Every structure is written in structure tokens, then in C-alpha cells.
Amino acid sequence: MELNIEKFDPTVEELQKMVKKSQAIVVTDINDKAQIEVVRKQRIELKTVRVAITKKGKEMREEALAFQKAVIAKEKELVGLIEPEEIRLEAIEEEVKAKKLREERMALLPERRAKLATIDEAITPDDEYLLAMDSTEFQQYVNDCVAENNERERVKMEEEKARIQAEKDAIEREKEAQEREKKAREEAQAEAERQLKLAKEEAEMRVQREKEEAERRVKEERERMEREQKEKEEREAKEKAEAEAKAKADQEALEKKKKYQKWLTDNGYTEDKKTEFHFTDNGTEIKMYKLVSTFKK
Image (cartoon, rainbow, N blue to C red; front, side, top):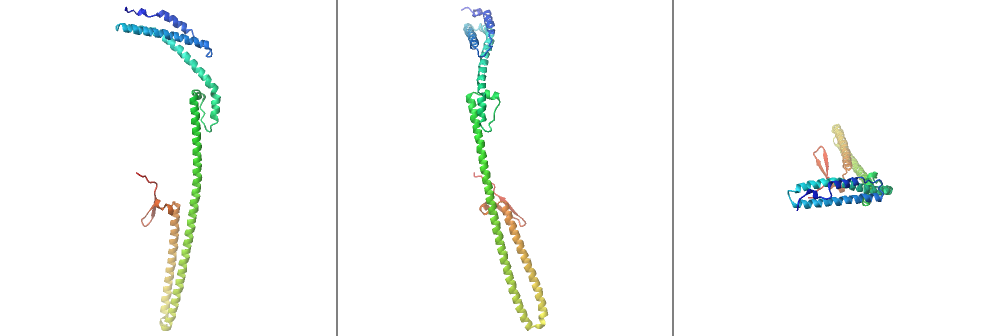
């Protein structure tokens, strides 16, 4: 078979005429079906010619490897003449499709916005964002907005429930603390009264014994009365001082006990939570440590 690049059909001149004719085609109304049909038919005609040229080129390349480069060059030259126009026409078709789709979605825009408006706290995007969605994508967006809104409501309800429970717990803890404090005060007061009564009874008995002893000694040793009277006065003064010191020490111990109980209460210590606390005492101060958490391996 004779290799001849000029075997390509149609010729360059014919293709140029075909492209020139096609370039005169424009769409002035995207709703004019006749115009769109002309574009489509012309594009198909160009595509048919281009496919035929490519097929012919392939056949000629197969005849001789040496002739291949020339055939490819010629093929590219010829295809290059019509392909840009084919692409232009295809772009027109795509543009028409895009504009029609946009018009359809523009008509749905008020309905979409109205639907989003029924969802509390839904984020309403701009028009371009909505126009870019097809029906499935928009419905998914609506579903996502509804799900997010429901989640916000659920979180609010949980937070409010937790707040109410926390307030109830705080009131209950305060009530328990007050009851413990009242009980501690009553017990401390009762103990103080008991100690005071014992001290009074002991003092009375001691005074009575001392009086009887003094009377006996007066009878037996009148000459030693002054010395014994002096010793008695000194002893009574000492005993009084000791009693006062003891009463003061008891009062200080009571105050320290109250402060210690208040310190425990203020830091959340209770009998049912005592296993969560640890104490150290160095003789001058007591330190409290609380268990924060336990990790099980």
C-alpha cells in the first residue's frame, strides 16, 4: 500500500471550511431548543470527522514505522483544526445545561430557605451555596441541621438537669453539715456542763473535808492554828489556780475541737467519704489529702 499523507480525507481546506461554518453558530437564547439542537448536531458532525481522521491516522501509522511520525504530525494538525471548535461547542452545551440547572434551583431557592427557617438555630448559607446543591445534597444538609439542633437541645436539657441535681445535692450537704454541727455543739455543751458539775461537787467535798480537818486540828493543836490556817489559804489559792487552769484548758480544747470539726466539714470530709481522705500530723499542723481518681490497669 502506497504511503501518502494526502490520503487523509477530508483535506485541510475542507476542514477549515467546516470549522468556519461551525464558528458562525451561537446560542442567543438558552431556552431555544432549535438553537441548542443546531449546536449538538454540528458538534456531532465535527466529532464524526475527527474520529474518522483519527482512525485513518491509526491505519496509516500501522503501515510503516518510518511513516508514523509524519502521520502523527498530520493527524495532530488536522485534529488541531477542529478540536478547539468541538471543545467550544461542547462548552456551550455545558454552559446551557448549567444555566438551566441554575434557573431550576433558583426557582426552588425560596422553598429551601423557608424549610431551613423552620429549624431552630440552623445556619442559613448564602444563595450560591444553596444553588450548588442538588435535591439529595440539600436534603442531607437539612437532615444535618435537624440533627445538630436536636443535639443542642439534648445537651441543654442534660445541663439543666445536672444543674438542678447539683443544687439539690448542695442543699442536702448543707443541711447535713448543719445537723452535724448542731449535734457537736449539743454534745460539747453537755460534756462541759457535766465536767463543771463534777468539779463543783469535788470542790464542795474537798472544802467540807478541809473544814472538818481544820476544826479537829483547832481542838488538838490550837497553837498551830495560825500556821495551818496559812497553809490552808496557800493550798486553796493553788487549788483555785489549778481549777481555773483546768477550766481554761478544757475550754481551749473544746474550741480546738470545734475548729477542727469545722475545718473537716469545710473541706468536704464526711463519715461516708472518709476513705477518700488521708491525714498527716507533724505535731504542729495536720494536712489533709484527698483521693482524686483511681485507674485500674
